Length: 221
Image (tube, rainbow, N blue to C red; front, side, top):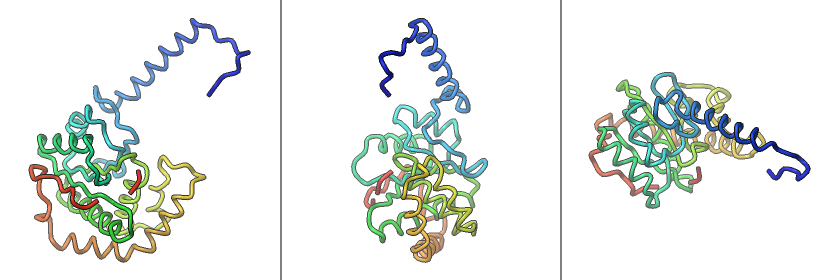
């Protein structure tokens, strides 16, 4: 924002304000994460085990995963080559974390497949008593939709309860929440069938991150 030229700002006060804001930012960034920068849009979606966020910077990802004691990462970001995703996969491999790249791409069929795999991955990890991080690139839409679907399909939550997840970090005036609800409800039976098919394979279908990350299948945010 450009301030009117008629407003006078005392340089000393401005400097002290900047220091104060920097200190506040440090408290927010380091508070719950010790000396680890707090990932953007980090949310504890289910107490003690299910988390969502945006993509974590390559410089921070190993520390965040370790300090948060994450056992499984479900990455919903896109298919194209991404050095940040590669850094996360490498960090998961080093830490012995299960890393699943489950891109939710454009097109209903691929979205059904991707969300089905994501929901199944969350359910399988929870059955093993593991801590799960679900993220997309911006931590805004796809991660919200995956957790809302987990609530609908696995927890049997009512739509008005499950779809509250779509409101986190969202502009209330945006149309995408309505569109997302319509899409999810329209395709819920197909996504549920996909989840059931994934779960039928059992936990042995999932392998630890020492195996190469799957980048063969892969939308926005």
